Every structure is written in C-alpha cells, then in structure tokens.
Figure 1 (cartoon, rainbow, N blue to C red):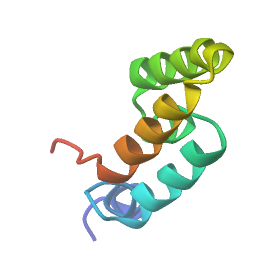
Figure 2: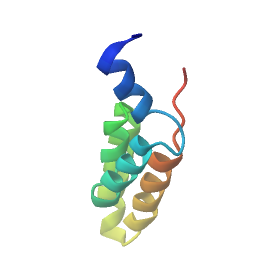
Figure 3: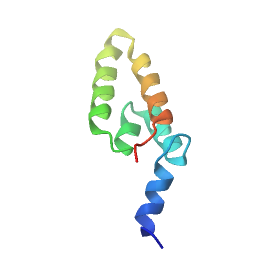
Length: 79
C-alpha cells in the first residue's frame, strides 16, 4: 500500500470534478470561502469571505458568493 488512508483522502479531495470539490462547493454555498478553507486555501477563503461580507451591504455579495461556489467546484490541485 502506498500512502495509506491519508493518500486515499487526498486523492478523494483533490482534482477537478472530484467528490471533494462537490463538498467544497456545497460548503461555499452556505458560507462564502468555506469551501476554499476545506481545500486548504486559507488566503482565498479569507478574501472571499471578507469581500462577500462587505459587498452584502451593497446587495452585491451574491456575486462573490457565486464566485466562491464556482471557484471551489472547479479547483484543480497542483501535484
């Protein structure tokens, strides 16, 4: 066996169209940036969360919210 459970988890959670991206997109649906945080992209998660929070005051937060969902769904990890 190469890598054990950690390698299996990483394989599940990485790659465009993977189950991990679907889970990340669902998380971002509820909280912008949460999916990126789940994918280990802390800076992108903070950026999207803060932008969404600020722009919701101007009723434009839905743009960042949508961007967050799509970004999480289409993320492809570098190997």
